[in-house]
Length: 531
Ligand code: WT7
Image (tube, protein in one colour):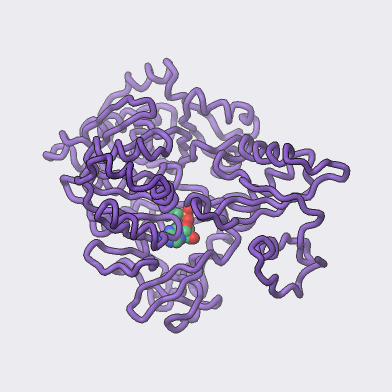
């Protein structure tokens, strides 16, 4: 992504245009980024980091994050990223499971791990990137480094993601993924040498790594990074100031911009924009129509997942968009709608969105959880001798259907995973955080449909006997999850309930809570304990 440009005319081109949240700016050429990342690689090597070690980043979107990420890959270590809204519990879960050796963070964020060091015996170094010691140490590192050689199947980066049950799982990607990342960035984002590209995703999530670091730089494209929070005026201001040409963002952000009306768009000169793409949650037809009205351009939907490592369902720039559809499979992929045992279903039938395993960016493992990894696949995968046609299917966890023209239409998740503002939240993690509170006996958590955020986290809470079910307590519980688990995963709505619907084996039946919430029929309750 970086060193390939050194010694070519691209080396003096701007790789990173950075804007801080207080108006500070910085810019780095490809050559500067190559040298900086070499310094990070040398620094890590001096700490004893070697191929296969896990090095994690818990940082805001500052230039250090980008240089350190590349430096980690250069040493052959596995780069892990942690979203800056995570609090202690979320951090400990991920650092413990991955047995991370080094963590890069800031003075401010480090407070959230400081109290948990005893639980993390493998974490040998917590590097505070804004400390004078570190700044001194990194400045002294040589700016050349001989990249540690990796094979296509060697691990490159990992990200924790949430499912229905249990703690978050470490999705592990390999260097071979670069092929798929490159091809999709070139042909779907349509990135070209003169573009100024802005991916609004945080590198704590997969989009921010694949399309917010690796692929644009592989293509030698100048990329904008904004360290600040979402703010419509600031965002329009950035699009105008940097003459952004290609913009990759998420439906919640588009809906939030839309809710501010057309006037703020008109107040800016956005004529440089030439291509818009979206990812993370269903892209509503209204959002596409609004984009056409105010930008003169349609948002092009892309569908993929942390596990798929790159875009899978796409809308190319030169293709007719069917508004509301997530598009067609990227060429080379074999997609299908299948039943739970992997039998392909006819067109216009709801089923599991599935792909033939073996695409270059497919996750290679769930960290130290073989059973979970194999549970994603039906039939013969991962059998070492399976040929492509009998390799079974990767089951995405989403329901969809396919029309007669080969376009796919998203229906919803097959599981209880919540998508709030495009971010993936596991109900179990939120339930676990809630029951840590002294007033809570148990909790059931669902995604409640929300016009702006797609879904919000809603918790049904059973209180300890004698506890008063007050509005203050609701606010306190929300705050509690925000402080202990993560700033983005807290319940925006809480309802006190006497008893949770459960199966005879004691599993919380979230689908019943959801049906009740939405006033829908409760459905088959034959496995229900009592309700
Ligand atoms: C889940 C994956 C990798 C991109 C960021 C999300 C939902 C993603 C779309 C879309 C409808 C979408 C799915 C998917 N999703 N893109 N275009 N239309 N739903 O990665 O956090 O791993 O989430 O996001 O439910 O399974 P993620």
